[in-house]
Length: 540
Image (cartoon, rainbow, N blue to C red; front, side, top):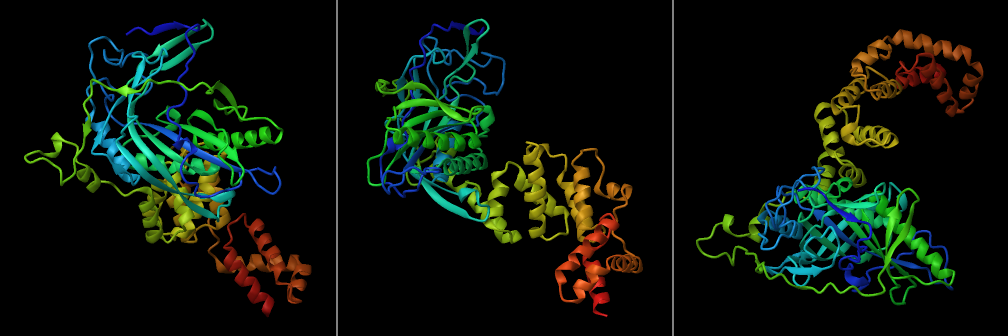
């Protein structure tokens, strides 16, 4: 289908955010001072309130109501059926895979699954929505009243991990819209309908959060759950997980403030920055005597700030109505399963429940038990895409204690990756090479300083093994005890002042002598053995 060309004079999109996360209603679980909220009225600090609406693209070969293929970055309008283009007379056919994914997600998030749910039409007019309405679940969604527990390092403190829970208001199925591609050169907007009709799971979180850091942690935990279940690949960079954040501030004991909505954030890091900026902006505006406008905003990651898109003072009438072409969605459990009906004919909630995989929280607990590492280490291992698999691959090939390995993974490897903005899959140091390096260190064939040098060489990605680098650069530990003793003796003779201080009782000076041995040998000396030699000689 040829790409539709629509002039910029088309009506600007009036479809404000879909349902607000709980409309900032419901019980407030806690009050936390907003980040950076130094300004106060009297002694009352500002309190931030954050709710999220998250749209996850379902992992399915076809769309929610048509047989069109789902494929990222396909040629524009190459994956569009007659129904997706809203040709008259076409009817929706519900995708069973999408229903199962929604049920699975609801169970994983501790929701109550509705055995009967309904589909509705949500009307709004924009060029990338050819039917003029979106099929969603407004009145009776597939799942309600769940919860999601998540952990994060409070205030960026790596040794202070906090666990909290956010309520899940509902989970519903809905179809995605198309995509508008703006051509500024020709002053045109091109419409790509490949995404139109793709199945989405919408997760509506109640406003139980109070900072960007907390919201980002909740989204990351949900992302891990979706990926573990296989219900969504949830790759934010590809638009498979999109987040709308509802933000407001108020003083304790007062009614919730006017909220704003920050739309379509596709990065957990940007989500945290957008929410924290919006909290500070609202506080500053209120303290300067201004008012907060109920509006939709966007986050400009280059400027690091939110910008207004449209106001929401005039309530949008979506004219919700029952979808006439879809019957109620009926689900079953083992008790209600009709006689002589097998699983392939219906969606059985209990059948899905029995096949749920271990969720990230269970995986973390098993990592702690199996390897004896700290819970916060497990949190980082799972939160970084591919890092846990990298760690486990290293553990299968190394003789080193897991507690030592975790330092090389989280400090050295992850530190280098973050510094160079690379993913774990892009790491030039493979798990095999790192395991070989750690084995050389564990067997004391190289020193810790030499190991760091080898690691830096491996980072160059030249394909050399750790052992090859060790031999080329002569980094092997000095095995000859007499040679090491001679080196230590020479260091003592050349540093008589330090030796005298040590003999007077200043044992800290011993580290200077050990440092000299390290520099003299180019990191080839076993510093532990050198220390023992010094202590023996100095005690004589």
